[in-house]
Image 1 (cartoon, rainbow, N blue to C red):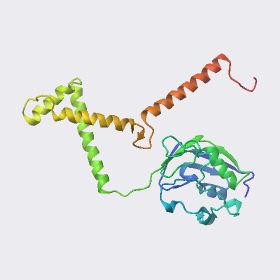
Image 2: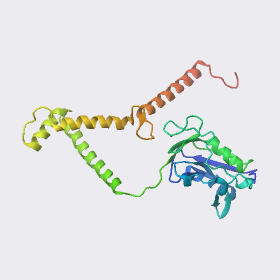
Image 3: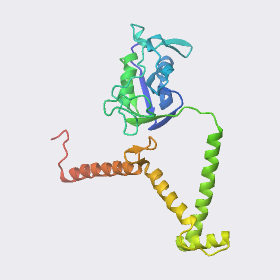
Image 4: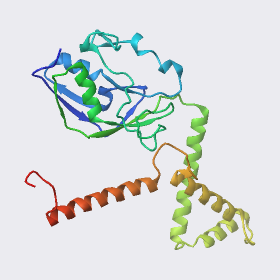
Length: 269
């Protein structure tokens, strides 16, 4: 079961969404191999496991058996068949992102992380533990993001949240159209709306201006996704996204300038 003479082609998706804490290769990649047995076992390989604070997800891997393609695959590491060995919840080398709740660059995520960045080299390393002589050709992204979102049943709170968002979008769109027609004269729009609803001319500050100020503050907080140093969600903030784009542009500029000046280090140098 060394995989000698066989080639496995991998196409990893750059961003994948999983519903179970155990992430298998078939959840994040497309694979192709002439040997159907190798392909079946590789697809069932568990490459990562999210730990989200539930004790039942911390099952001893030496006692867990999984079925792949009708055969029993032992996930343990206690001297089993090397052809059926796989690393469960391997976190070595997996880069924990800023928005994953981990311990930094060590790659060992704490419980609660819902987003993880994994290198294709880690996946290849796990496959070679099963098939050491298998040739692997990666056709996808060198690093990929895995998001874990468990399936949740619809509840009254979720329906109420959806209805509230629909109302906000409706009135927000109406306000945008009115201000556009009035040449972005927000004060005039508020005055006319107040007079049509109450039948009286506005005197000083009205509830419309107060609500507008409060809504504007909350909108800015939710858009930038953090209050002080505390983030609202695990997603990167718009500032972080723009900073990464800026870093990529700077790196590309260095590379292009070096190429034009003939300062690149290549095989001839």
